[in-house]
Length: 261
Image 1: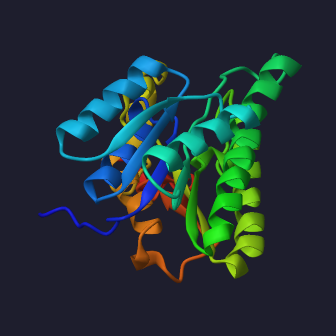
Image 2: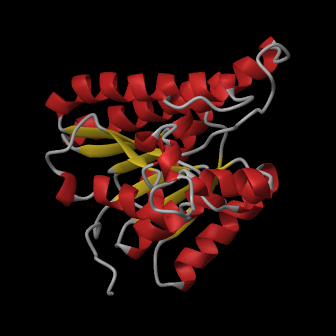
């Protein structure tokens, strides 16, 4: 199937896009015609994503910035607008996921998760929106997680930060909608990425698959396609939603009838 070209003329910034799901999002937006600022704290990985985009005929630049630093974020956006054009799309994908028992997690790790996963999207969203308001249009997508709604082991700080991000999405959508800015959120389930293969034991992976109605883990491309929809004109009347991209995992809950026979 030929790739749609819905984003010709757009300029996007994707945080945490040096690898994994963020890379897939950046590559997909570029394939649909957007010029992309690839932002990450890992410069070598950002450069690799840019190389993939450019090799495929797209436009992209690598940016190194910490999303919790307003100055670094602002500087990155200024460079995007200077080299690629006015920013029209921002995707808040950068995140960390500490895995510690609630009784053992300390304040430093708790604050780190909230800083990257919630304060970071606030800063990026605010800086992007201030630029978009001047032109009366823009699209912001926040990446949450099924952990915001469905309890998982050893992820209290991650779950809390992602639940906060979903609430922030609704608040942003309500205030920014009248100013011409679309704000939505995606809540992925477990996706088959190098990180998930390292952090989730095979037995746990299979248990998750057993409880997913579609009987497979997500692929980064599944999530990237959903992001591309939300930032396109096809989602022109979609505002403030949290879209699960999890194969039905949260919807199914703990329904034992879904265990593979």
